[in-house]
Picture 1 (cartoon, rainbow, N blue to C red):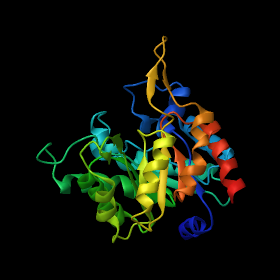
Picture 2 (picture 1 turned 120 degrees about the vertical axis):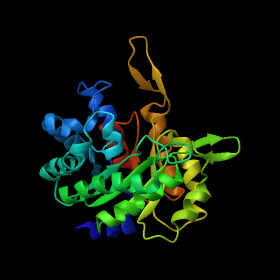
Picture 3 (picture 1 turned 90 degrees about the horizontal axis):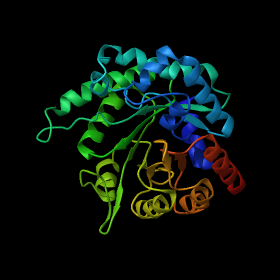
Picture 4 (picture 1 turned 90 degrees about the vertical axis):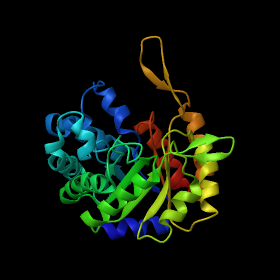
Length: 295
């Protein structure tokens, strides 16, 4: 099954889903709760989010497991449930996946730092990521997406652990900020650092997600495409978060403006497109129309 996702990438642009966190909040999620715990406590809610993205046109949805590494779950006292919560996130998607669609296992950053900035070794990170990736793999995902990485060293730990845990394709995206000197992660990694680090690895694709709006993402993908032949992933934010008078978080790039740059992202070389923070099934439906018209 997972080989056919790689085949699809060769034929046309593949569409992922939009934000999971944004949709969880629409269903009553509040800060301070562990999102992955809803896989066990509110499975119908999680499945309805998956369903809505498939219905909107997503070729693949990502599991509700972004913060599911053992180290991340420690902050909620749920580290011993790491394997089960990740496996459950994939099993819920497998229950409702339409024929011919895919499930991607979402693996986000630990939220911790490696030595010398933090207290953890690379081995600590690899162990934490291995258990998460194994749970997702056993739950039935078709591929893993290591996403929103800001430290290349940590990204490599996640990649090594994932390759040990599963034989399924592994993709990786980092989060870049736009600066006067170009695009860099929070830890100072450049686009070329990412490309050089993974160009010769057995990786199925690389790219960027979060932080950038769709206009800036189009610019980043153009730069990235000039220096790699790997499949490229682009998942832009709906702009930057803002808080309205009622305390509700909104994003400052409206849907019309957001989707107006999708053709540029495709033209500049993206093979896989999805949405990040602030995007929802309506965004995905609009992108699906653009992708299929262009196909």
